[in-house]
Image 1 (cartoon, one colour):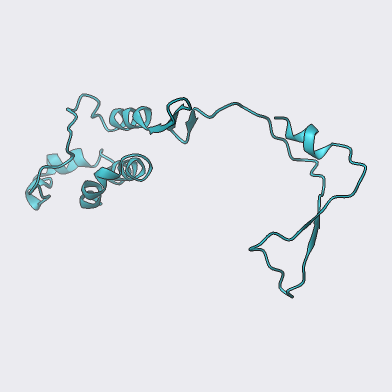
Image 2 (spheres, rainbow, N blue to C red):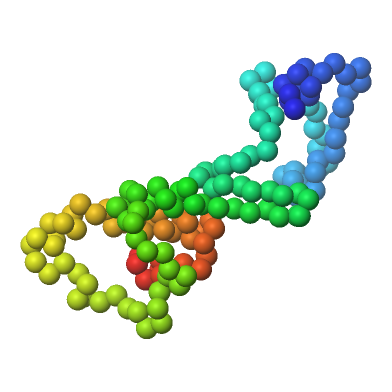
Amino acid sequence: MDVKTTFLNGELEEEVYMKQPEGFPSSDGEQLVCETIPLKNFDMKDMGEASYVIDIKIHRDRFQGILGLSQETYINKVLERFRMKNCSPSVSPIVKGDRFNLDQCPKNDLEREQMKNIPYASAVGSLMYVQVCTRPYIAFVVGMLG
């Protein structure tokens, strides 16, 4: 669809007005009348169906009535960024009874120095993004991390 030429530059023989839409009351309670104003800087082109939006893959099968979202590419980037590309996937992100404790913290200077190179907050933030967008079942674990 070419909005610029179809809607903004179309020639009309009559003036077009509309009533103020519900939910947009005026401050003085009067009925407002809107008229179209040509926008010279507005440009929109039809790019077809979206396949990716903010690192989320969109899969749509109209015949079967399916709309799917996937962050596989983003998750693989995150695993690579935090050097976990070869980790083992798990059906459950945590085993019942698992807890984080002080024994898992760095114990000596060497371990503390190694942890300085790991952007922990960024890793947790990346997991939060995945949790909010497509993987709500990791919410409990992400909550434990942050």
